[in-house]
Each structure stands twice: as structure tokens, then as C-alpha cells.
Image 1 (cartoon, one colour):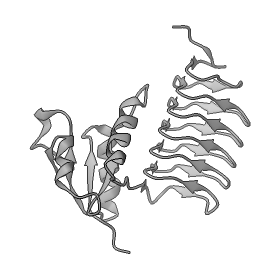
Image 2 (cartoon, rainbow, N blue to C red; image 1 turned 60 degrees about the vertical axis):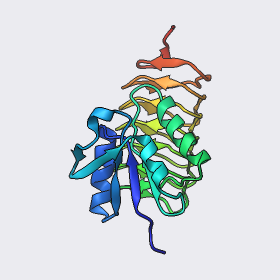
Image 3 (cartoon, rainbow, N blue to C red; image 1 turned 90 degrees about the vertical axis):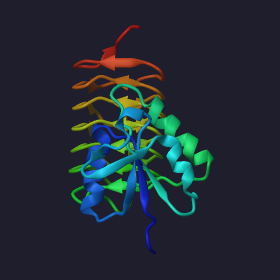
Image 4 (cartoon, rainbow, N blue to C red; image 1 turned 45 degrees about the horizontal axis):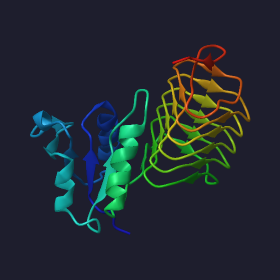
Amino acid sequence: MKHKPIIVIGAGGHSKVLIDTLLQQNVNILGIVDSDQMKIGQSVLKIKIVGDDFYINNYDPLNIDLVNGLGSVAATYLREKIYMYFKEQGYFFRSVIHSSAVISQNAVLAEGVQVMAGAVIQAGCHIGNNTIINTRTSIDHDCRVLDHVHIAPGCVLSGNVSVGFGAHIGTGTTVIQEKKIGNRVLVGAGSLVLQDIKSNLKFWGVPAREVKK
């Protein structure tokens, strides 16, 4: 099946890494869109920023795919908002899988998943829509990661870990086996998660403990 050309949403650092991967795979990139009007006309890795997000409406959803180039530092709301907005209009989000990623044939990846260089996803895992598995992250057997999650670079999830909707797991975090991380949880970089974390909480440290608002 011939793949459709794509438009990348966002012109930041995460987008640059995605575009680099897509170019290595000879994907036809029509251009980049960004909400910052000042960026229009500039380029990322020689791919032109052609307009703001509404530029996408010039294309029928049947004729293009989208790639969500927005990253997240501490919250995934904006990335989720972009995804949901264009899904409601009938667009499809292409997954981006780096050639060096190791993914079990018995893992399930939903729509728009991004698996970056050196990441490992083992057997029995399920990765939800619009989720980022970032550089050199390791996800062991039977983990369940829900929609709109960002597992940042260098994280380790042991077996049977679950990560809730919209969570952000900071760079270099380790989560031991069978722990449950709730929806909208933020785990700070470099943490060691030894306990379940209820939804909407912030945890950080070694071992990770709740950070009060």
C-alpha cells in the first residue's frame, strides 16, 4: 500500500527529531505547520514551515496523514488538544518508529505512537494513541501505557507497569514492576517509583514521593 504524504504539526525540538527519522525513511513531507506566525517561511532540516495549524484544512483528510510534532516537558495537554482537534475532522495520525527501536511482534501500538531511537518495547505491551516512547526508553513485558502519555528519554518501566491517560514520566525515571501510575500524573526526572501513584499527583525523588502543590 502506498503511503500518503504527511504534514508535521509543530516546529520545535521534538518535531526536528521526528523529521530526521522521517527523512531517513524517505517519507514525503509536504511541510510543517506551527501556531507561531513568526516561524512561517523558516525551515527545519530543509523542510519549510508552510503555515499555521489551519493550513492543514487545505487538504482532504483522505489525501494526507499528520504527524504530531509537539513534545511535552511537564504536561501533555497541548499535544492531546492538537490530536483530538484534527481527529474530530477526520485526519489520521501516522506513527513514527525509528529504525533502531526494538519492538516485539507481540506488542500493540495504537494510532500516532512515536517510538524514538534506541527504545525497546517488549512482548505483551500496549501503547495508546498519540503516545511518545522517547529516546532509549525501555518498556518491559506486559506494560500498559494509555493515550497521550510521554515517557521521556532514558526511562525504564519494569514488567506489568501501567501508566494512565495523559501522564508524563520524566527523563531517566525508573518504575519497578507491577506499579500503577494514574491519569495526568507528573513524575519528575530521575525519579525511582516504588509505589502506586493516584491520578493528578506530582511525584519526584529517590524514592519518588508526592510533591505538594
